[in-house]
Amino acid sequence: MSDSDYFEFGVAHDRRYTLEHLWLQLLDEKDGTVKVGMSEFLRADYGDVVRVILPHPQDTSEFILDDEGTPGIRDDGEVDSSPDSVSTGDEIGLGELLVTLRTVSDRVLINSPFPCKVLELNGEVEDNADLANDDAYGDGWFLIVKPHDDFDEDQFLDANEYVEYLSEL
Image (cartoon, rainbow, N blue to C red; front, side, top):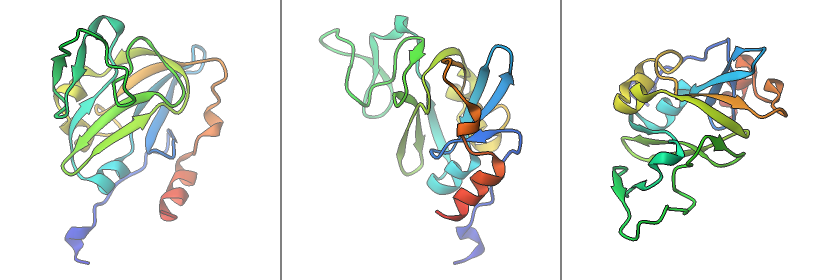
């Protein structure tokens, strides 16, 4: 393999990680808010992210994403309830779709690793996917959530455990 076949990536040490390559940063221990983004490994594995699609509140549920990921209104006026549809509403359950990434070569569906309430979406990363590519641990974050009471950040990998996990892939 040539040097161009490799992509360097970093791992932030002040985060926890999921096996699906999301990072979790506890923002406020008292109220339990967590910022969520993608590990730089996703870019190394799938290539540049060209689009980020986040879940949106109930009031936009009449919009769906077509095969190209562009918003549209269904002909029958019904809400899309297929497994690939974006979660609607403030609450996202364990295993429900959290974020969809379109890369240069694939579509990556990432499900929520825990049930939570969405507090804030990073609209800037939806408008400019390069933020996820260029600053995954900074301005490229996806959303801020409040996990339900049974959330325990210790169930996720710390930076050293995540690096060890990556070395086994």
